[in-house]
Amino acid sequence: MVVHAVLLIALALIVVRGMGGGRSLSIDAGMTDQVALRDFDQNTLETNPSEANTEASETEVVEIKIPFPESPTLGAPSESTPQFESTVRAASSSDLRSMTNLPAGGGMEGRSSGRRQELLEREGGTAGSEEAVKRGLEWLAAHQHEDGSWWFDLRRGPCRGRCRHSGTVGSSTAATGLALLCFLGHGETPEEGEYSEVVRKGLYYLQSRIRFTAKGADLQEGTMYGHAIATLAFTEAYGMTQDPTFRDLAQSAIDFICAAQGPNGGWRYSPGQPGDMTVSGWQMMALHSAHLSRLNVPHETTTAFSEFLDNTQLRYGALYRYLPEEEEEKPSPTAIGLLCRMYMGWPRTVTPIREGAAYLADLGPSRTDLYFDYYATQMLHHFGDPHWESWNEKMREHLIRTQERSGHEAGSWHFGDPHGDQGGRLYSTAMAIMTLEVYYRYLPLYDTRAVEFPY
Image 1 (cartoon, one colour):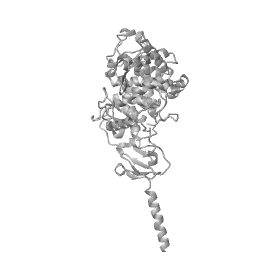
Image 2 (cartoon, one colour):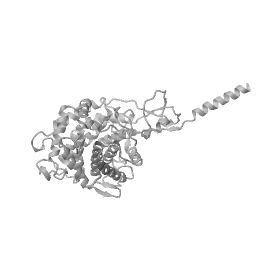
Image 3 (cartoon, helix red, strand yellow):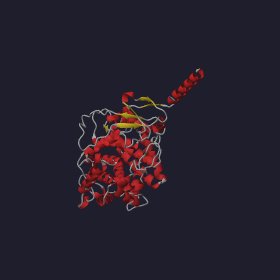
């Protein structure tokens, strides 16, 4: 009896030790971005956020029911907004250790002529939308200055004021970067394509506008908007060509973005200012493109930006504010914040992404705000159905229908809103083109062919 008792006690100690041998997994319902989310075959344990400090073994999985509070802005769910179960599935501690390998989204391989047509048909584009893109590129090419630049002010250069709705923003790096992104998004490079010379001259102009500083290559011309957009043009040019000249310029411009990050983890108009969501969105697009192009982005930069997103989010990350201190969400910051969350590793199955996608889809494409449409279209394209097909048809047909078809303005767009008034016809045209290039500009983020790089 004594021997049996000793054996039973020893076995019990082994079992208890085995149960406690795993690393602890502490999950907070308001910090779901710190949890790797994926499907598992093992049984799950339901708990609530207040009981979420759970000792998890290497294989244990925790499922959390998150009670989303009613939002005074969202109100009651509409019939057009599908309802999702507010469930977040958390990975085991062994999966958390692999979180340095976060998805960086689909690559730029879809821009080649063969893949472009394939993706256009598969992802919801039409012959009409592609013709609208081509007309827009023709308009942009006709408005490039002799030195390779573009300007928001259409009263100067080849246009000589023949187009209405001239912009007021003075940054030529922003204007040139926006125009170049349209050509690069269509697969045009300095070496290949119908507009190779246009692209070559534009990139050469941007290179001539760089101010080399101890913090990196400065392309601001008065605003971090301009710097991020021009940097994005360089990172995409390098990613598409692997030209070492573009690599050095792009890396130096990325270094400047990292050095200019504000104390709250975001970016604003000038280096070092506490950030807002709209300026930060462009910086994140450049950083994301840098990852796709295998350039170096410090982990500290993305970690600080993740904290900025935490401080601007509402409803656990389903909605976002323009500034952390504001009380209510806004459509454009929400679209930007959700897209950034996707790029930084949140899968489409996490509840805040699903809730956010439903919120954007319920709003529908704006008839005038291309800034919102540009970001929301990207987010919903990556998300896919049940929202993408309906959103895409409305957005696509609206842009095809509103493109100018006659006179010197043929191929361009202009919408009267604060962004459209400041950026003018050049801004509206570039944003419309990039929105209609969504089908092939980047491969779908959650496609099995998406490329992963470590953040």
